[in-house]
Image (cartoon, rainbow, N blue to C red; front, side):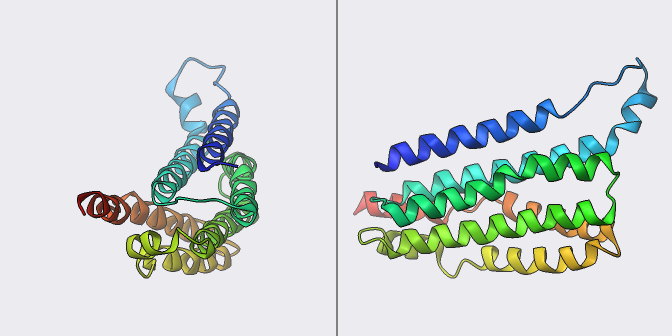
Length: 195
């Protein structure tokens, strides 16, 4: 399979995930702001999840710009990541519909944790494939953000069962951390083009 096919498949899955999430949003039946206020937890859950899916899409895109070859191990690692991301609409709806109850917030964190692990495993599979390592290693460095994200998710899942809003705060911190543009891959690719 070519790299382009893997990217196209992944883009399609992520588009479906976002579509499912937006279809879960039910319009209020009342024509006033009180009806919207009642939907605030659902809307906040959606916004947070939309941001996370966008972050994964963007990073996946940048990651595969630095990749030259894919193999079976990479395909399965990519499917593993997409599996966890496909659960985001379920946990998003559960968390919003229950107004951030402890168990749904913890479940949401577990899905985010496993998606982060899935992304880490995808990176490891890409690094293991001959022809990919030099550019990726230069671009990714120590991957501090990836590692600290996993730690934050672990802490947030533990917090969620007692203090769900503190856990949500950690999810927001991780999202903000990833929203700061990471130009390492682009810089590395541009340096390779200049040589």
